[in-house]
Image (cartoon, rainbow, N blue to C red; front, side):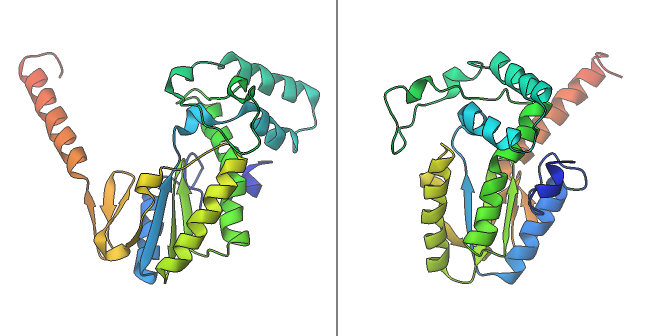
Length: 224
């Protein structure tokens, strides 16, 4: 409750009353109101989350030393789990010791999912309050901004790049395009349009493959 009360209203992952369906609905609502969208996703999100910065965020609201010790213990226990999935990035002001910083949260852990929201909450409010974007939402490491002009979204993209550097994160620059909403927005397994939404072709293919596998297993008696 301490952190939930501070979370951005349009952060949709791993929160009671939110979830994928509401995130898709909200994205489509924005697509009906604005002409252009900027969709961004963070590079190697969970492997990149910096332990020192995360503890600063958490400890600011948790003065109890026992809780701080528990958090530090959990973080340290996962150190190096995703080291093979992290590509070192040099940020302004980094020393030669920067690659040794402790980082990474095990994907799938409930603590990792919650701490990810804590880590990126300041980004959410930066976009809404500092940049003044009134049409913004995020699901884990995917987020989208809407506006009536391409130039506005490009300015916001540059500002977000600078802000993320302070969190020791980057977004996929090759995917960070400003596009008209009518071209369709890839989002949580769907392609969302102002008037409708479609499952991504890859998801349809995977569903059909699994269905055929289950039918075969049922006929052979392996499942009932």
